[in-house]
Length: 161
Image (cartoon, rainbow, N blue to C red; front, side, top):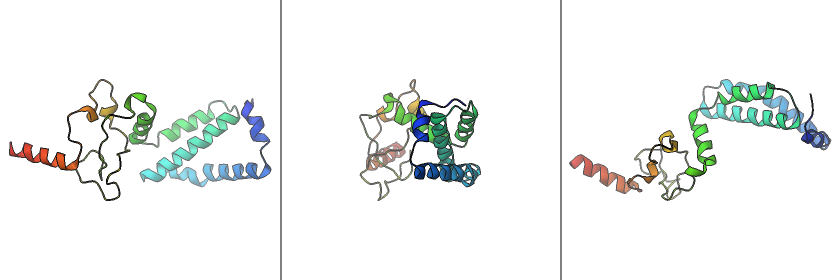
């Protein structure tokens, strides 16, 4: 194992932090590993995120060949598409700050009324895959009504026609 330049600094951290790091590693690689098998989405994604964070930290502080990369790939397989879409929406500059903000809804992509907690706040949910496709027209650029009231009126108008 060839240590990285950051390894020297990590090795000389205060003893309390080193012991906390060992305890965190045992906790993450022990009981938290079982979260990767959880059928519930949130604990599974949390477990995968913690595993990836630990493996990245290990990659930064030591050279352990491809073991850490394999662990990261396995943890990534525990995440669903919405996690990657949210990351893409944050990282791709072409989909930041659309000129028209979409209203917050109780469920993403539906015509339901905004929930009381979300009323008036901007929708910070990840864009749908069709909105991330550069060849397709972005759904926020279409001539769609912005408010729930306008969508309801448009739906009534279409039903009447």
